[in-house]
Length: 190
Image (spheres, rainbow, N blue to C red):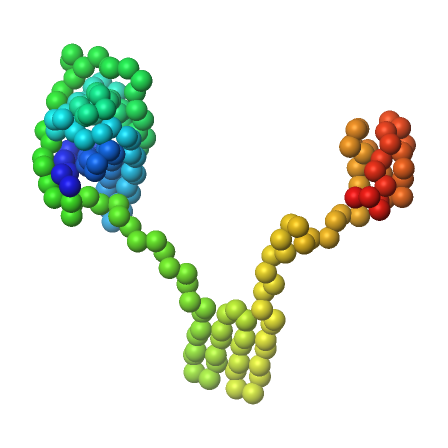
């Protein structure tokens, strides 16, 4: 995979790469001790030429010449979107792009793993979460495990009903709405 990168200034770097039919743009913003990456992809087909990056008065424009045609992507702040028409680039500055290796594309973060239940021990005090349990010397305290949420289909039906015509509260035994007279479905047939 061929990767091109461009320094946009103000701590931002843009990475562009093409795999088969997809062009992927990765915008990386770096600040003291932090790094954020935003990735966007579009179906272009294989590139015919390396991408060109322009700086205009208000944004960055990326031109991609590929088998599927000519594409323009606008980068403003931390957002990227494909332009529906060719922008005016007469006074735009062409930013240098460098070819680099696949290993330099950031943003391939591993998904977070679930946390292990917390266990803690200080001296003779022990503490554990899920189920919550605490022991200190001879004393012990324990709470039952948390209940799983009941699926909506298994949840009990609410005892309060409303008229489907006007929204007035009705009793389960009512056959007609006391406000609008609409015939209600009987409790047995629900």
